[in-house]
Image (tube, rainbow, N blue to C red):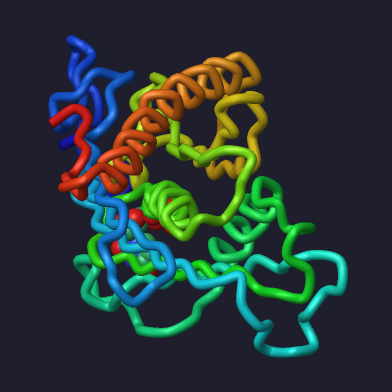
Length: 252
Ligand code: UDP
């Protein structure tokens, strides 16, 4: 442990470039996706990514509630991201807070830009993301789970949306930050990519990077998203094969 002021911070990067969990800088945590994990929803997916466990359920296109949100020329996309009280070390107060409202908004907007919303006027496509266990990167795990759940629900989209956070730890650019890296690193940048066009539909950043580091982070994130995309597609292939439903894994 090193120390910064009164705060004890873990050493995030060893002299040989290994991270606290032994990963390389460009290595993802193990990722497992099960498409169609819930019977009641129109579409669903369960994602285990490192120590994150996230369920997504999709309903729709269906009647809009509340009614005044209805749009005559397109469907609206309403995402509710929720972190369970028991999902983190220090119990989280249940219910809506600013963080979950912000995450719900950016995820709704990301999906609104890839779903063919104009095909379903006066309807709502509802996405529920429940974080059951959290270890940083839960909004990205939520986007991955929701993408697979939307495809499982048969909702037409331009493409699936792989998503990952890139950041800066111990002065180096690293892929897929875990909690200590997110808390004590210098920067955290979640993103979501439309793989076929290379368009980013979600990009946020906390902390500081130089322009050159930002460029390298974007490259590393795009590369990470492309690996995640393969796992997402395989989860859907397995779901729709006879006897499918097996979990898809990367890096395990
Ligand atoms: N976290 C927590 N309590 C909270 C919010 C977050 O313990 O009320 C933890 C949790 O592990 C989360 C991480 O901090 O995954 C990073 O949170 P952030 O807001 O950066 O979002 P995320 O990285 O999960 O998308």
